[in-house]
Amino acid sequence: MKHLAILIAASPTAAFYSQVAVLDRALRRLPWRHWRYSLHLYLGGAPEPGALETWTPYLAGIDLRWSTAEALAHDGDWAQSDDVFRYAPSGADMILALDADTLPVGALEPLLDQVLDSGVVAGALAHHPTVLGHRDGQWSESSVRAAWTRLARGIVEAPLDFRYAHSLMGPEQPIELREAPFYLNFGVVLFPRRWFDTIAAEYLRIRQHLRGRLANEDFSGQAALTLAIATCGAGTLALPMRYNFPNDPVAERMYPGELAHVAVFHYLRTSVFDRHQIFLTAEHYRAFLARDLEGVDRRFQEAVRLVVGGEYPFG
Image (cartoon, rainbow, N blue to C red; front, side):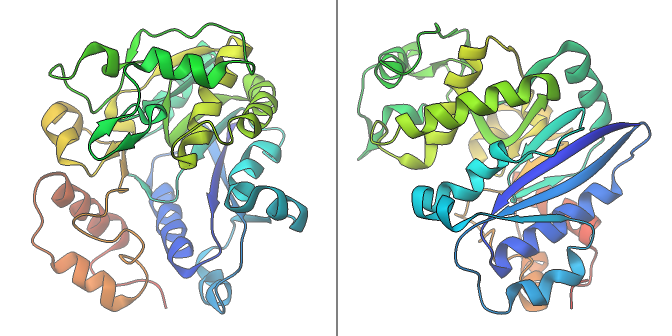
């Protein structure tokens, strides 16, 4: 069987452990016929007292790797995220980088076969041109191309292909803001193993150089990956939104057909519910299931009920 290594970066808190426990439960429900998967959790930062001991029974079979003190001193909160690229397990045919706040609910094997056969890096496009910087409702630069030119200057020379578009920006937005290189949302990214090590080395180099060049450093990893893929010359595949569907009303309006066939929910928005609280305790879980939600939030709620069950299964 082919081997899929699933890599997740997280902080050592009860909230993250609860998300990973549910993600693991969701993966176990999927049909696996000619692929096997292993789940690897990269942890960094100060552990929440008692959290790991409480959640260890529900993380059985998951490989835990802790960032070193040196990495934490140098990279801070980025240590565990960069460790995903430093310490991916060898021997896997495919690497899947997942955010902890994702919930797989549909078969993944057809996509894995497609990506492996075509030898491309695959992911869903980033929602907005976050490389521009944003303040008071205004983008800080006039065009996406100008922002990427500034970011890449002195770091990489490879040209960027701007044939893509940011996934949550409609035609009412000017093309100068909508157009995008292969700039991915980090929720779900697939790498054939033959490309991963080369891209990872470039990613780690480039991300260090991007410090101070972005208005929001939270997106330095996404930007570094774009530049690393371009530098390495890897083929790319923009995935349909169904493989990384956010709990966002804009996505619901723009992609109703994709919402009807979601394979992976990405519950990153916090305007309706707190993603870090849903699975933390029985009380929080019951409260979430009792919410009267609408649209994509309701679809996600229904998926959670199916995966986790009507009763809280942890503790």
